[in-house]
Length: 115
Length: 112
Image (cartoon, rainbow over all chains, first blue to last red; front, side):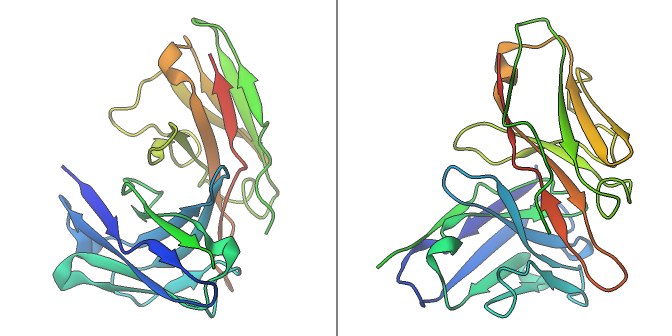
């Protein structure tokens, strides 16, 4: 069974940093691209970032470029999202999801940005 | 990039057929065969229902079908069931040779 488990969310002050992790099992992680997608409370889905299987290609949404960094460790079946200079509008549940197409998804980790 | 346009809500009775539209532009929905649809229940992660405009992953009921005409994609749910009551999101690749982007629709709440 494929599983994606996110962690690292929590409460952080504006301007602060968090590092999210997503550990994968049940498929050959090193052959798949991965994504982060977020959902603000009561709002819709927003794609955040993409990383190819070898980390050669990395892309970001305009709203996070320059503040967030996606990375992966194929030996540890993990993908990460380093989030710096966090803003109130970054508050959301963050999901990792496998490409192509977002399938499957993890259960999400909540990031709260508040003073 | 603006979000794809979906109706905020649709409703139907058990057994009926409903369609949710998703309107974009020739730079996203109309430009590529990459529209996908997701179902989300409150407090849970989304689930892939349709990919590449019309394809259904194994395990997804054949009551769900996707189509596309020009810049508008559609999700049709036939034989509505109570358990279909959820939020539905469309999604499209919206990149080019110079940039990569993915956009979602605003979501549609289906009431059965």
